Image (tube, rainbow, N blue to C red):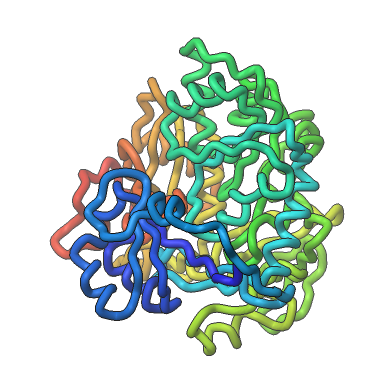
Amino acid sequence: MGAVRAGLNWRYSTREMMHVIRDCDARLIFIEAKCLGSLAEQVQELAAEGRVVVGFGGEHDLSLDYDRLIASHDGGFSLPTLGEDDLGAIGYTSGTTGNPKGVLLSNRNLFTSLVFNNMVNGYTKQDRRIYVTNPAGININTMCMNMITGMPTVLENFQAERFLDLIEEHRITTVTVVPTMLRRIIDDVKTGHWDVSSLRQVCYGTMPATPALIRDAYATLGCEFLNRYGVSESTGAIALLDNPGHQQALAGEFELLRSVGRAMPHADIQIRDEEGREVPRGELGLVWIGGDTIMQGYLNLPELNEKTVFGKWLKTGDFGRMDDRGYVFLGDRQHNMIVTGGFNVYPNAVENALAERKGVAEAAVFGIPHPQWGEAVVAAVTLSAGSNLTAADLDRHCRENVSKFEVPKYIVVLPELPRGNTDKVNKRALQDMLSQPGGVPWTIDKETV
């Protein structure tokens, strides 16, 4: 229809929502009734700026309602002619390192990603899908897979028992989750009564899965597994560890589960040094992504664009390496690297080591200021149901599996980890909590110096 769609995540704060609205100069805002509280006090302010706010999905006190507008329309509509390079959508990043950034996506970006992601997943109109990760960001493209295949798609916030009810009720064949969700699903299936025999495929991403989790998932769910990697700026997934790759890993090549797979057909992946030169296979460097799904740039951020976008190549900010077979192993984001006592620590490596310990559900590793070391390595951990691991147990495990300078100075066991707008762990929130003046808000179970 010619309009450019920009996602407004319901998990954003009011300040972040207003930033997004003004950053992209939204003229028409659709908001679900149950989310209206986030902007209730700003509606008049938005109207004064010439913006139209429309409510939907329940009772609300806005003057315009989506269903009533549709019912009152006469049906006449003229579609404009659009080009491949015209702007199609603006997806906003999670905002964990500042204000959410607007990612400009062309129609070519969106269509290319839809076609190739459908192809590698093997979706057909016979499939039925649940999509539970954030549909407000770039994932709107993933959410729209049904537009090409015609498969029914159920949108639902994640709650394990409700999720399993929907699989059984609608005979769902394919789902997209993150590993922490997968763990909860497996635990509930083992102790419950759900029929999940319709499932043929589970897609996951945002973090690697441990061999123990995948082995348990195969035994419990009996379907195929795909790990996909992409960033907001690449319009979705550009690398894939397919089901044969998972089987190969469980047959003995466990290291493959630490990879995000190989480049998908529509994408190029290179590992380069700080000067932008490609490094030999096996060496650590910065991940660069190329292809027709690379964003057009960030909205209103020209200086950042100059450092990030180079034609059809994107400098991601992720560290990684590529082996001789093309498998990509991610290290961590550049800004996540911890410098402690002069040593560089990549949180991903310590998180992987902790995740291998039976009884650990999830681990987040980050740095906080330390008077002696510059930064102290900190691990926040949640435990699996029934686990009684202590921080001292985890300390011993780390000392046996990572370098001495990588062993966390502090280990904190928590009931849950704070999450951001895309369901990833919000490390900035953890850092803020532990860096507060006057001490940390939790009891420190263990301190090593």
